[in-house]
Length: 354
Image (cartoon, rainbow, N blue to C red):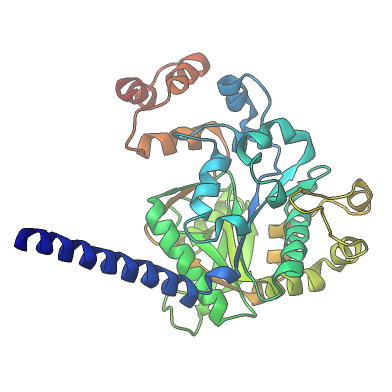
């Protein structure tokens, strides 16, 4: 009987501990304003630069975000799972393009009410601002993270921790947009660069004002930026929904005027389809060049620290990322290298670890 009572006592203690753990998790989420968090995953790009590789892997012209380049799942599915670490899963929207329906339904078929479907790809700014207006109608006090769907981060846990910090900073600085910057390794001319200003006041010691942007600079400028401590622009942003829309009001008022001309009232449980007539009235607009660059005084930047970041913009970057992963290479990797170039040192390494 003593033994049975002890066992029963342990079980009760475990149950109490589990309840306390659940309450602690709930309290943590409440303290972080968990329910105010939203995400916008950008998945409407055409993936032209990587098309030869994705065609080789998949046998069709799907953009890279719908291709399983790195491990299990497509890049879009990996981004969705990454977002769920910091944002309520049902509060992440996915900006996609109608022509890619056959591809995005494979990843997002179960979440129609979270899809924002563009008639065509007109750059990053229209997709971002339409999604933000959609969120504002549901949560005027929302905090929003903008997440590209075709990037890689390692280790993932460190990226999530930095994203958590960005949400905290955005909550404390409701007028600012927080831009995550990666520590550069080389004078890369295909990336955007964030030029740092002075340290920004706040609870986080490593946030900085932004003094300027350089999108795809010349090699000479990139070398100067590297030496000055500038960061690569990851295009991951976090801010109050109103902070983003204030940027739009100042630098893209025409978009707000067009999108505000019709109510955004999709049927319950259905995707939000942007009307063709709205996109017919707008010009292509790049968020980095036409919003972030002139709006630098409204931004602060948070370095990713030791996180390895890659935008997977060309085959060499894909392979460089694969070589850093502690996993068996996909079979297509060696086939691609053998089919496209003579085998050198890096190709021999690929063959050896495949």
